[in-house]
Image (cartoon, rainbow, N blue to C red; front, side):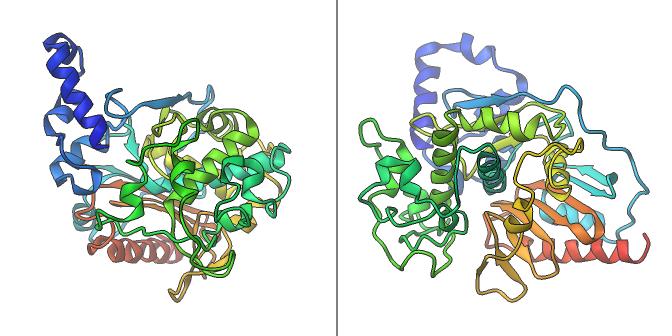
Length: 393
């Protein structure tokens, strides 16, 4: 991120005012708030407010691939308004940019803040992981990936001879590779902070270059450990298997069949692969439509995008994470009551409750990546919505 920002400053100096004047008003506002000496984890709240809605606006800041919407958007009819005491205080405390609650296929609540609206695109952060997971299911359905028990190095030959040589696709999906990794968002020396800045090996994908140097900490499959780098590897694996960019496959398998209404974008890493563990920019309503896609087992027309049992596996607890009532599936956070969630830092989320036919999609800019009070408040809010539905609200 730092290199992109410095390059942006250089372009401004060399390119002069004409380039700057050509930008739309919102993008100029983003540029004015963007630091030139820090990455996203150390941006101020105002800087994040500006940037999270426009991560894909400045080509020098971050290159992205475009994802076209469906020609026939999935209708989201209005339902009975959901009455939730304390809603305004909750939205303010979360610093909500957008929230859409759908129950039984109808919009029960939709609100926006931070000067964001239904037409804008907000970044997903790790919510993208659950989209990437679904593309693995599509690649299996299409015959590009033969089995979850295949070794990762079968599809990414540059990993041969590394700690990933004995890791299966299933173990990568469940974050149980056993390879050592540090995901501390507030540690500037953590792998999650360093791997995007590392210089790629010649002719090798940037993520693969970094990940293949990591040592083993545990035998494969034994220990769950959250690892964004491994989701990026999943993206490389899928695109290598299907021989298409991940964004193209997403458009073919999810975005258009799922009836997404607005264009989306996916940020690219240093060597041109989509950052599979992060950074899908989309409208909040389309994040909600993805929740419906998962809830219904695929598109509304019944077409078969993933194997019949895919979502049953993906959204079921596969690994214990050491938190009572919670677990981890195939890049999904699971609840023992059968609910499931995609979650990204700073408050991005898609919550799906099959029993209540409920989807809650939200975008936000929390005060801290994960360590503030907002996470617990969001969990309490999910329960409040469930209780309101149970009470016949």
